[in-house]
Image (cartoon, rainbow, N blue to C red; front, side, top):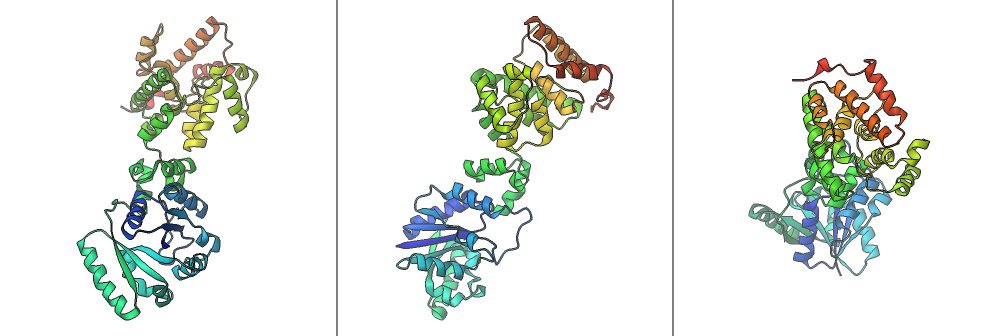
Length: 396
């Protein structure tokens, strides 16, 4: 059996890694490739904010797990210490004694082989499979191949590869800017977002796709309108536009669930609810939505709170809380008596609009025989006392 060994830090593993593996399988007719996340690479400085071994192993499984011929080997992580290739090859040779081992590497690694630990013994155990991207690299490899063969009897095979032009280092810089998703498998990207790795901030198109999958068609139109309105309000009042967009996209993600589903989520997340909330579906979705947003999308505390209080409001509301509460109330698909005047007021006097919105909400619930939650009344009283954001701080 021709057995490939493909090692790396995979922090994170990306489509460039996957493309290279597929090229190796195809060009060298490998029957199997062991993908091996390193524990501590001997030739690299550890990056600041490097993912844990457990996270890198899981991302590697998500990236390569279903690739033809690929298998994940965690021997270096289990062994611990610095991950010297000679130790790994020796161990794998014992596991697969009848296999021809092909050690996969880039040109930069190939030309430094003589600096590796026990490189002569290593070259006697493996065939070097070297990825090349262009004719210049091929010339370099051919020259080096000749010398290694003459001096050490080394065997080398070239792997033409049309690379994805990205590195893990570049990805770690892009992810906090809501960029780089296109270089990752969706399963890997979702894991990174879920775990909050590398300071990631979720790509908005991806976030919408995930949120909309949790909604019915009518609710999607509402959420899209809420997002647009939240962005306008955020810009008008100097609120963080990205946080407003994120909170608006996610604010109704559990709205589709019935009362039993909502209560099950409360039990799962240990959410404390009162008697009014226990029987009122409309009140529960804001709480469960906040916890699901934190669990699945790793939202920050400000976004968590804005989702949590977007239905009832609360005392001491932040600027983001106010923006999301009002955007939800006045977004373009809303059509009720007084909505036009409320919309206009939102861009003239934010706290005055919030007072009006809370009053309208209380009146609406009382009209239908629904007991308003005390948080709504408390929010209204807090605003009326003037212990709130000063609208004179409005930006532009």
